[in-house]
Amino acid sequence: MLIGAAVMPHGNPVLEPEDDETRKLAEVLRKIGEEFKGAEAYVLISPHNVRMSDHLGVVMAEHLVSWLGFEGKELPGEWETERGLAGKIYESAKSAGLPVVDMNFAALSGEYSRWPLSWGELIPLQFLEKRPLVLLTPARNVSREVLVRFGEIIAEVAEGSEKRVAFIASADHGHGHDENGPYGKVKESEEYDKLVMEILSENRLERLMEIPEELVRKALVDSYWQLLVLYGLLKRVPMKVRETAYACPTYFGMAGALWVRK
Amino acid sequence: MLIGAAVMPHGNPVLEPEDDETRKLAEVLRKIGEEFKGAEAYVLISPHNVRMSDHLGVVMAEHLVSWLGFEGKELPGEWETERGLAGKIYESAKSAGLPVVDMNFAALSGEYSRWPLSWGELIPLQFLEKRPLVLLTPARNVSREVLVRFGEIIAEVAEGSEKRVAFIASADHGHGHDENGPYGKVKESEEYDKLVMEILSENRLERLMEIPEELVRKALVDSYWQLLVLYGLLKRVPMKVRETAYACPTYFGMAGALWVRK
Image 1 (cartoon, one colour):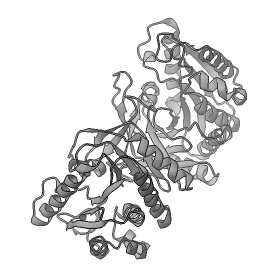
Image 2 (cartoon, rainbow over the protein chains, first blue to last red; image 1 turned 90 degrees about the vertical axis):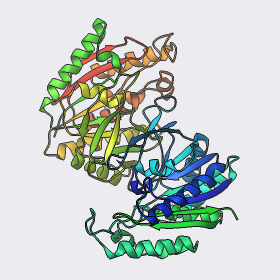
Image 3 (tube, one colour; image 1 turned 45 degrees about the vertical axis):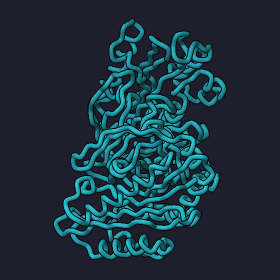
Image 4 (cartoon, rainbow over the protein chains, first blue to last red; image 1 turned 60 degrees about the vertical axis):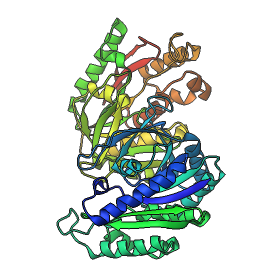
């Protein structure tokens, strides 16, 4: 069964917060880790692993291995895939007609069945006790409905599982918050981040469907698609939001949010 | 335009041959490298990179980075993707209705757009001068016709390119040649390898289509699907076979073969 869900950021600043807002955000991430100690498996969807235009991905490789840090921040470690759950998510999504692929690497099982992790997974995982996990990848060129349906399917599979499962959307928001940042300052980043924090705090994720494509694009986000999957999950298994926090110590917005069963 | 094609093995023994057959095979691999010095880009299809059940893959990540050696044989190095060619292969295959995905990692471009390489790519690359390359992945649960069509499309795109392109199928054959090997001794491995060497030497790849599924399965190969892609390529751009060699120093069969324009 699903025990909870979370939005977690993947920016280096949460590892060593230097301001109050970021410290509060890191505190929420620690609370998520505390709550999810009760989980036996995580389902983690990340925008910085494999990126396919129009197919969702389910990683089936046995071993998930740290490979790529951001700005030199290496976070070594190895995790195991919860292959039973991963296989069920893949099969269910495929049966439902979603554009989805199963992904292994090198060998189908055993020591060579390995998969690389980036900061997109490694930073959220720093706040979570080690558990087997299912790594999923979103896609930008599939319809909103497909992403929502994927979330519903994840919820259905998790609910049908004997394991206690927590879902995590790795996501950062607008990337145009700093005129000296790599994307400069764009007003849409602020607009999107405010709107998303309202949506998360009020637990009204259905409002994500109203956000114009143009705003998502101009705000330079890597959160929208994972949030739609989370919306699908919460549609199927409603939960209450217990914590939210936001910080923007550099050029991109970071959010933490925790949902638990009522 | 396409300047040649090759079958290359990915077993460690070709790096330090210990018997005459393997030395002869390594000599053919060196000749392939010599011939392909004239290439400006390689298209390499490998069975030991990402493995998806029923989708072909085209790696779009900018940087291809050594990650996983076999039995501790590390072969460090970094290659660049020929993204123009990769994009055209992906788009053409997709337009033709083939089940294909484009694959990037972490970031869509720049220093973080990286992709891991395994022995399946690294061993052939030891024999080839460094060039930009397109890395492709086959799939076992697509029809033979899809694999052949993929080869035709690769040939069409290469022929339409201003660059001189060489195609390489990374492939090892039966894995049941040694009763003390990990798969034991199975007679189908010998049968398959003999048949494949006949087909390659006689340059009659259309005969691949006659090989029963059961033989492919029982022979424990990781070559058949890439060879079908090669068949499609040679169907579209007929070439003559100049070199072939086979060796089986341990439990799996290895072959080298070189095709050049007539």
